[in-house]
Length: 487
Image (tube, rainbow, N blue to C red):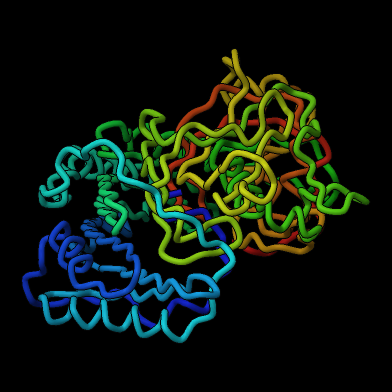
């Protein structure tokens, strides 16, 4: 989710820390793992070493204005202190550049553990799996060459925009995060995770109208910035005619980007622990400790799932947990991840759950996974097909400033941004301006009347969680609560 779509409740065993960039040549990450485990004096220990490289381009006014290149490495030590009354955990994360700093990191984590009470989620550590190829290899890094194809395409797009009196603004970023996990149980695991995004805003020469689009990628070879700019130019052309329309409930076509923002919000709240406690929208009303698993949420046979091996959306295939939370536990580090169906054929089938949660409910563990896909099997319709099949309704292009109103119903509020258009008799006939909306992604699932083909999608507000694939959908009664002057 990539930057993770996961909403976590932190526990107090995590001491202040955080990654900073050191000027010293850091220890190789696999040596960080091995040396920290060797120095550990508590009964058990888990070490996570992460190396992150990132490059970016920024443009404004039809010209590149900056580029960046960053490197960062952090280490997390989770010291486990077995006592007569249980197991306490102490976690510290920071940058380490040499063996002296690493020794202090281990000592600090152990000191934290000694002052903590035993935790409730303690379980035997995940045992060693099969040998991990390349565990001792250096981390994979990105560099500016990833934009080799993008930069010339941007120059062409800038020239076309200038000739047409349009102005382009945007940002592209590519990041590779390599994660190494080891534990005193013999676990060794490693993953290289590339992820990239491109965001593009197009404005008319007078600045009165604008349109936004984005793309998620792993290497930018599949990003067609000229085609994206062409789509946004079409939206600007639709905006030449202004149509006054009051707030209300409208049949609405949502593009994959907006669907991704809503489904990520749903995923972040889909906690089994909170559902069992009766504290979220997935609780079964009137049932003590019951959840809505098994309940139909959508009349359409929609599937919502995560799969670390999904082509183009690959993510870490094992649990990496720096701290424990509602549905994640440090004791789950290294637990293998496979495809997990959250919703299958429109029916809620699973909620995120740690190994500890599974041990208390009799279910299988279903840890969170860092990607999210919504699909309707057999779907072939594009967003344009959905527009053509709409008699009267709205085309909402992107969402912004989405916030929670009621966790019990998953009711959200937020703003539409950069264009809402009126559809009449299957054609876009003008721009209607922006609205504040109040709606629930959970309730929306029951009102989706059509879903198109699933494509890679960049959520706008949660763009750091770029590993999503969504269809365009048409939903009834989308609640545009008030008109908004936001642009």
